[in-house]
Image 1 (tube, rainbow, N blue to C red):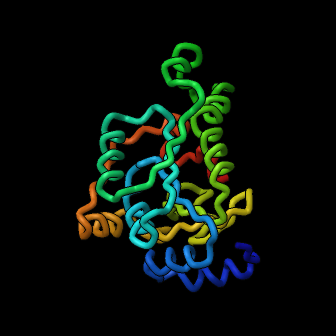
Image 2: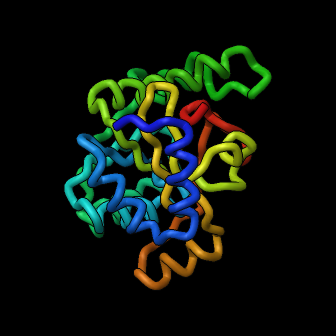
Amino acid sequence: MSFSEKEIQKLNERFKEADPSVIIDWAIENSKNAVVTTNFRPYEVAILNAVADVKNDIPVIWCDTGYNTPNTYKHAEEIIEKLGLHIDLYVPKQTSAHRDSVMGIPQIEDPKHAVFTEQVKLEPFKRAMAAHKPDVWFTNLRKGQTALRDSLDILSVSRDGVLKVSPFYHWSDAQLDTYLEERQLPNEHKYFDPTKVLENRECGLHT
């Protein structure tokens, strides 16, 4: 799937008020190999449910840093079972126990933090995308999360030329709370991302 910048701009204008299901339907119809990625952070269940409703056999790439909270792992297992997700799990090549003994979790200002981020998040993600070779990548990016994400939109193109589709881009937390409540879907807020430290900091996947 290949679109010009002008075409993507027009599509974003068209989809601004559209229901997520309409956006997902369009993306699936125009894709040859779509995937959805997740880390089971808060509100991730919304995109997983919305995409699975349209295509229930879509590959779900879970890049697990190995530092999730027990609550997040329990939440993930609940969602996987409830939605019947087809999970393809990617983890770092080194265990968290090994890394903790030689590096720990470096602070942002520590030069090792870039190495840490590459090991626990970027490398597994690159490996997953290389294996699946998607032309459409469903994410739950939303406006207001970071400065970078504010510069994106419902549709954007990754550095590798993959069409990123964020059906809930213009939705607020309150709107998502209603969405989850109406569908009796659980949420989980006790989530820890060791690469970001600050909630509004990018980890590198979407830059």
